[in-house]
Image (cartoon, rainbow, N blue to C red; front, side):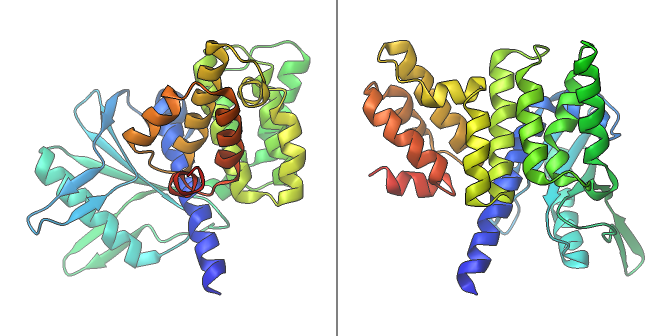
Length: 298
């Protein structure tokens, strides 16, 4: 039972990390798709220290051009009022310390359909803006984008971002096939820069690790090999550029799986031995977290 809970917690952490990466690098495309107005100016701190010298960690804060902050939480479980009280604390501390108005959005994934988004305590009512992924249909998105590609019509960045989120939605297409379609469709588009495509493929890979069984992952890895990220993972070149490419691929994967310390990041980037990097790639792909990778690489 404890092992199962630990496995679920790890899966939830992977999803949180993937969603943070999506918002961090693709906020201008993702927010309009989610129905959120405003232009992002920069990413704000997510670690606050209040008067009791207690650290609180939020999932994501964005500073908007109008001076307001948008606070995001990513939930694959429905904690009801308990979670809402925690979000209220985050919002109050962030608003007080940074002297800004804050609006909290909660993106609900998993099988959550009707989450509680407000509660009243005393004379005050607190509420967040819920974004329920089960209200979106993965089948329609995939079919629409496949149709556009068949007609050689360009796909927008916002549409590609919505494609990445399909594993979190409802639909009859299996999650494995949604992920395969996502890799294939993104691999055929050129509306993003190479490094952006690599980031978005790393997010898809992280979601695949959360949702798919081992035998399904073996099938997905065959699709990954055809992508830019996959080429970085499997290319056996021995020149400096290739060692750098392998190191960057490892960092991409680990960034999705959790907080990567600067010391570990530098150790990976500065490693020039292609054989060592090749082994580390396998370890990174099999590790559940960045910490797990650090232990295994020893």
